[in-house]
Length: 496
Image 1 (cartoon, rainbow, N blue to C red):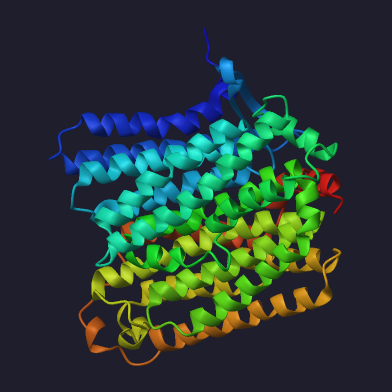
Image 2 (spheres, rainbow, N blue to C red; image 1 turned 180 degrees about the horizontal axis):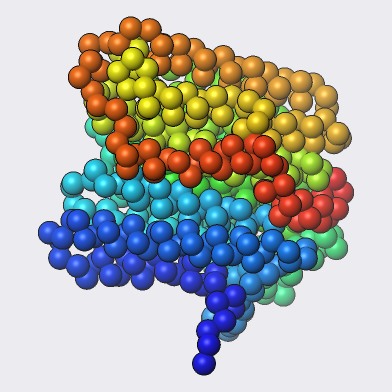
């Protein structure tokens, strides 16, 4: 009897890392090398499976595919319901790729190796599950599953202020989760006890969730997602978490977990509660605008290289929120493109900062001058990621930001919001060039005088990110061919 891979590919992608975590858990604590090998094998297989999913999805029509659905807790109408469409397919691929690269970046972990990789693999299951879930309760389970592994990865393997950063991350995210849970319960009882996101979207499009207490439900769910993005004014947990997290955790946090926020907007807030969205569309756009400009301005003031990259994430994810606020086909395409591209670029930036820190034991920009003279490969890769972050045409960073601004300009949003937001592009180039001038150029500082350049493993580790950043920048259809049909449907539902 043959096994039809397409029937269970999403379940495999979700639970394969959990199986890997159980295997690692059963291994001796002293077998550090073998544990790292198992984790690398598991995440590598996930990349292969997600690539298969990408190519299998390529010629399918609009709608949900690779659906798996059966009753899980019948008494509460909770289902095991997985599926993927143009909004999630790219994020599933991104999760697998960034997790694999982050696993390789974790080879330097020497403290409690077994516990680290068990948590790392459980985190991978939570992220995959959230992107694949179409039952709201199941989505919430995976959403919460991500929280504890990242809390411990920061709190145990992080920097000097790791406990403070981990607790702050936990409190902010948990507060948002509580509000989302309350909103879920309200939707459950108002929809004749359904958690099915596709059914809830149909009810939302029919005007079911309007008036009364629904604006409060909208805001409860909205806050959960803007905390995750994160957007001003609930962004303050992010710089602390990034600075204190180990390199691999920072790459996953920026590369994948922030995208849970924008994905939540596209999967839940817009299709299920369109009335709430239309009532507060301008407020969302203003928050996006403030995040873009504020994040870029604060990044300019940083003296810590990792903190600069962290604040740049606040700014760049603001462009994704702006595209969502536009609710046009182009804007939604831009939001998805920003999410995917930022995952590649920010992940690479944090990996490069980690390479520099591992050699110099400092992240102070003023102490890292002349990197190109001593470590030309690392300097070149850092420069490439920085230029990609600026949104240079021909690289993936340009695609999403351009589409988000264009989509917002063509929407009902006030033109001044778009004009002010466009300053983020200029500021982004300014702080990245400022950083490159001080870190990459000039005479090598005494701190980097004896440092070794990138190893072959490190170069190979970031090569897939470089290839994808260039490929998507030159051929937008590699990404947009999937999200554009879904964006058209979603824009139609919201009247964009």
